[in-house]
Length: 79
Image (cartoon, rainbow, N blue to C red; front, side, top):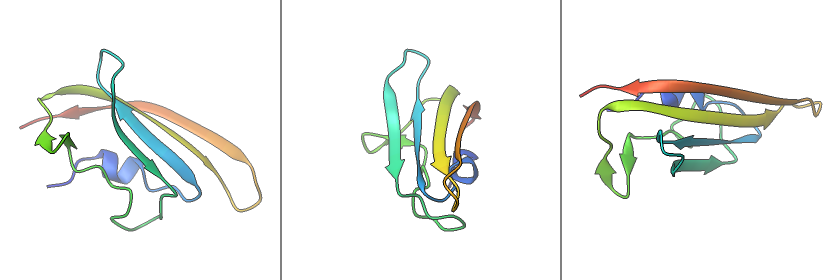
């Protein structure tokens, strides 16, 4: 089962990272391919499902002409 972060991380030419409320990075993907499963977070950390709660994400990417964008948000994991 994929989480909503999968859809948030579908930006080309960039990185996507996620962390818990204590600031620990629990996910990172580089060279994300849009509209694919490549770079999708599966809701795990160290091969175990994360606990229900609120997690933050940051997406940094640039478009084909080189404009840089950053997106920051949160996602709630429910089980």
